[in-house]
Image 1: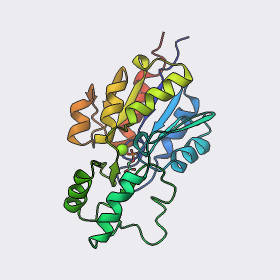
Image 2 (image 1 turned 120 degrees about the horizontal axis):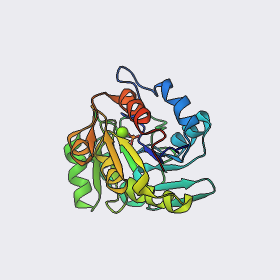
Image 3 (image 1 turned 90 degrees about the vertical axis):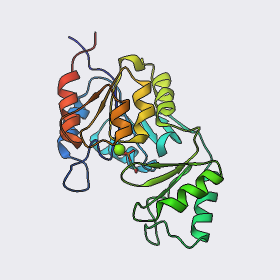
Image 4 (image 1 turned 60 degrees about the horizontal axis):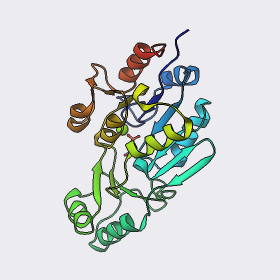
Length: 228
Ligand SMILES: O=C(O)COP(=O)(O)O
Ligand SMILES: [Mg+2]
């Protein structure tokens, strides 16, 4: 019997539904049944993908914070320091802006290596301050992320593959935005969902006809059982 290829999946825009926030529940069963490693590679803070793996019922193979935090079953690697991003955010707040998440800010509460800002907040001054301080702003379509340019999902995915002992040239990735470009470059076969931004579409081997989880489910159907 042929095996499944390792999967590297983005979360927002890729496992979600187009019409509302949240994961499309149809992705749970195929991921639980997947006969190869499934890595969730996301811009979200570390607890979110860990919880998603937990609730799907699959091993916790996670790249969080756009590569800032990498987790295989038994080891956490922190690949950056939050202080750079925090300095950008402090200057942004000092200039009279807000992160836009309310007083408890659960978006950033557990972030260890980067900071996310609501897309309802002004982007121009954030980019200006980040450039001045040598940091980068990624617009995922869900938030602006202030990140260390040396950090990437792709590098995180390489760490997971090395530690788990699978070959990324056999892996299949699906994503929707600029923060997935480095993942697409790291794997053998990459797909951008139809709702993806122009950078992700340009970097992917193939742009799917379907959006969000519909596109991802089509890929799963197509690549299941195709490994030697
Ligand atoms: O946190 C975000 O802004 C986007 O998350 P994602 O990388 O899973 O799409
Ligand atoms: Mg995404």
